[in-house]
Every structure is written in C-alpha cells, then in structure tokens.
Image (cartoon, rainbow, N blue to C red):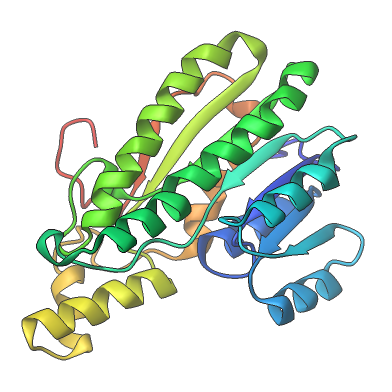
Length: 258
C-alpha cells in the first residue's frame, strides 16, 4: 500500500530508539521527511548520516523550552503534516513511594511538553486544513500497570486532552489519536522488568517470563510492528479515524473495547 507520504514533513520525538526510532524509519521508508529530535547527539548524528537528504535533527530534551523553541523555529515557515508525540516514560514506582518531585518531573515529560508543542504547531496545521497528531502513550491509559503510578495517572491527562482536541479540530482535516502499546522489546520495558525483578526478589529473566505468560500471542512486540500502524495513522488514508486510543498489546487488554 502506498501511504502517500512522499516528501511530507513529520516531527518525531525520541527518534533514535524504541518506538520513535521505528516510526521515524517507517516514515522514511515511505519517502517522508523527518525532523528527528532526541537527547543522544551521537545517535542523532548517525541517523542523519544514514538518511542525509531526508532527516533533519535537533539534539535536545523536549521537556525543555529551548528544545521546543528550536522545533517551532525549524518548521515555522513550512507545512508540517504530522506530529509523533513520543517521550521517555517516568520511572517505575509505587504510589506510596512517589515523591512530589517525581510527580512534577513526570508532569513535564508525560504531558506538559506534548501539550505545549501541539498548541504551538496546531495553528500551522489549521492553515493547511490538514494534520496528523499521534500520541505514543501506554496501555496504562486503559488499565493500570503495577508500580507505574506516574504513567497510570498522567497519561490519563494526555488522553483527556487528546480526546477533547480531536473533537475541536475534526472538521479541519486534522486527526488526533493515541497509540497505547503493551509490552514491546524496548528499553522502557527493560526498566519495568528490572523493577519487577527487584520488588519480587526474582531474576530479570523470570520477571520477563511472568509478563510474557500473560500476553496471548506469547511474546513481546517488536517496535517495527508498532510503527507499521503508526505510519498508517499518520497517512491521508486514516482521515476517518480520530479521537481514538488504540491498544497494540498482543491481546493483553481483556476489556471488550480493548
């Protein structure tokens, strides 16, 4: 299927690893242009060298105003076709053990920076009467995950914002959706496995197997599988899909509406 993404410009957060890296590569494979933002300068440089005519980079942390300013400046006079709002998740912690500083930090990384970037770039999409806004969150927006209270709580704020925004801009050719990944082979899941290992007094291998045994397909997902759906949601073909939170979890979610 031709997704009609040739030369369309997309912002991708966390573009050098995990979901962000896989989505960026999926878009590039479709001929898109990618503005890749990440904190690791060496990985960004290598990524840019691999796709010298298709990738622009900004080295920075999107929770910082300077990085958001640089993103907005980079696309200020251009058509921006899609935003992939992807940032590192907060550290695993139990509700009773979480400090107020952790709550403040998680608000910045999970919600505030994404909301600010969308707010600043939305006017450009409205001028074009076209846009794709995609939040990369977690199945924790539908079902709490043990020892992930910061994610469980604050990703719900993002979901509320995204659903509200989707209704406001639906008639302007702009879609707003959330992808809610379950357990995939990413560094973020490695941290979850490590925390489960520590709190349960078992090995990391045992902790990982405990997770896998509850995944109906019998394995963790691959970021590339996740990215294939993301690329479609970022394409013109997805014009009638908006305001949705789509689980990508190998069948973990047991609710009727997934």
